[in-house]
Image 1: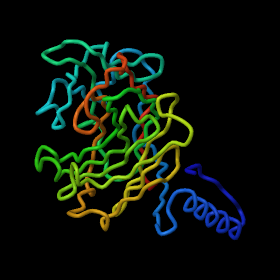
Image 2: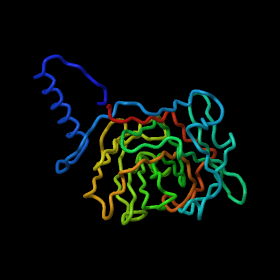
Image 3: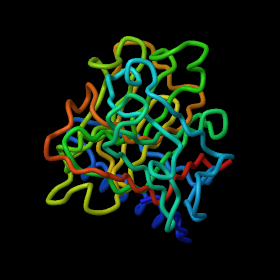
Image 4: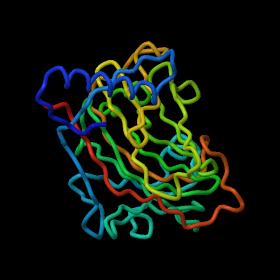
Length: 279
């Protein structure tokens, strides 16, 4: 749906554009919704994870430790920079959760961010990912406002492009958090994969984000739009954000680890790409 096309007759071009818009609206939204769809085709950042070894330090920070109160969510893992937990291999980023005693925690995993390195206001952010499976696993691909150190969370804003509970392998959630609509009051919508699972193959998770909307996609299917009218507070999505990829274990969102959850579990990332609107 984002592939450019070039047609000579003006009338044909108008008809095709209108037809594409109607098809997208029909397959992507409820009958009482209106959607704003834009196309961002100017590639501003990509990591295809082509070089085996550690992640590219020019693009990514590896965040370590347990954070504050389990990264604010009572998570159980200790994030490390060890290759057992994070590495690039075979054209993929591997983020692996292990069940092991490490620095006082019962699990280890990894989390990376592009803070201070790759930050952008508006555009399309997408990643192609195969998710793990098992009760208590919490992989995520998300964005945080770059001013978090000045104004803290949730005033900085948060966009969860993809969150997933390992015990529900066919369902993911797209969410925004901000002042007045964070944590349990966040604005979100689920997407259910019909007759398939997110742990058995790769899928593309993305958003297209403009001044007054955030559109959520799975495999280019538009399933949710959030606008300023949808939030019970200040719209704070008008500044640069940075990217986070992580695999948490346990915590408020997913609950305890299941007795039958098998470790290790790996989140595989084929690529991350960011686009802006052409000049």
